[in-house]
Amino acid sequence: MTEQDAKDAIDQAIKNMKYNQKEFPCIVCGNPIKILDMGYYDAIELEQNMWDGGTVDPIYMPFGSRLDGRSYYIGLCDDCVEKKEKDGGIIRRRDYV
Ligand SMILES: [Zn+2]
Image (spheres, rainbow, N blue to C red):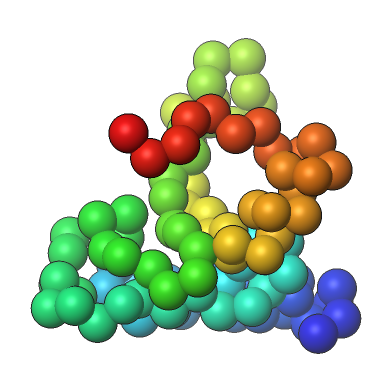
């Protein structure tokens, strides 16, 4: 998948975004991250679902940001998290507690 394909996939997913969508694109590579169908599909918030091979979580734009007050969902696949952690683009906060 090219970088443009990834951007197109993300744009399309945002246009189609619903709270109960079954997949979400990785913000880095654009590959789909799919909800694990464990019977919790009707979760109200996307982050309450379990995701196959990645995560979908909210981020919050704080005071000082031009986007102060906005909140977004982003998807990150496991492969991109591992690559970015190696490159220093992501800092591991903690392991499973
Ligand atoms: Zn990815």
